[in-house]
Image (cartoon, rainbow, N blue to C red):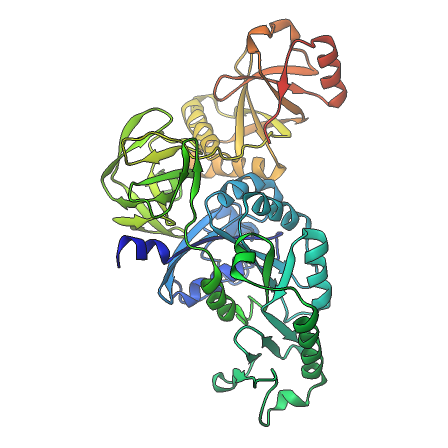
Length: 521
């Protein structure tokens, strides 16, 4: 394959949903089709001892949730697919937001019984803001759920995007018989012998011949619904999908692996190849020959035995070759990329070559920060900034054992570089305060400090605060710091006020109108 053909064969997407909608289960089934794994474990693997491949961190296995974004790569039907499985839990939305900056399309999973949930809505808005095409998979059809038309209506009303049903359920729950596949013009039957699985439809969109399913009133109901969709439904075109005007909707059941292959094959036909990326010097096309990429995630201790750190790099243009020199735009330094890996959760293979659209891991000895741009040419530029959130919850942290200060500081610095927690120090005394978007991040931090850095920590909750950075730091005086407006420094040495509440912030602004405050996202 030529370089251009290689790039055109890449499909890079993230799976987004509310916790428990079946995101990790769907990922597992997709990996099964790609031959990447032999048996799918569900996230509820605690009882069976079978864990989901994409949940590699100890705490994920214990709790049955995904708290980090995993990257998995496999080949299917002439395409190379990079899946980014993101944490559904809202306490980790920052990690998910950054992951969405590294993909070209997104798959949104909706629980057929619950419809659109809060976290799904939040993540959908980020995709919309970035103009990412969205595919929708309505999951858990093997359980009783809401009426399919009601779900389609909710998609349009709540998300403000038109929907187009690629297939349509015939019954659901105990009476789930299969799906009417509008796109492939066939019926896919649920729980039948393989030779009975697909039944072709005639020109009128009905079954010819003698099949048991035709005797069911659920089949008649599905035909009626499909006729209604054909007459009054939305129009579907590739352009409308790419522009974020319409989302193709697929119905199925990830747990029973039904409708997943049909979804994957249709997805591959319509999903975009790697897209151009914005930089401070204009756009960079994926097919440009000069190498470039950006780091959207840093993960410490993916292999606890080696205490390693991996920076996740999205390649945006050109070709990666192991050992190649690149320029780090933030520092102007040249770095040799000699240690690189591709992923299947915690299984890693050394990667020698990769092209635009691929996600690779590069060994990090402390050179990289989230959002860094790497380029192979002589021209220096930077990709658009990744979102950083203003934390809302804060904890004062100290090491239980003073003899373990070295481990304590190393652990904090490495975990802070991953971007889930933010580090602050009190202005005068350098006491360590951690900030996070959600409570669960502190629990993961405490767990990892103990298990990965062998350090017990004491955490004192100082509650929710309003963090505000300062435009004109030179005008800030020490005396402005108080219990209700605590002055701290962030990890880059910038001054930040932590206000007790809205009232304290307004009072401060009235008293010191000359201080210009701002927040992150």
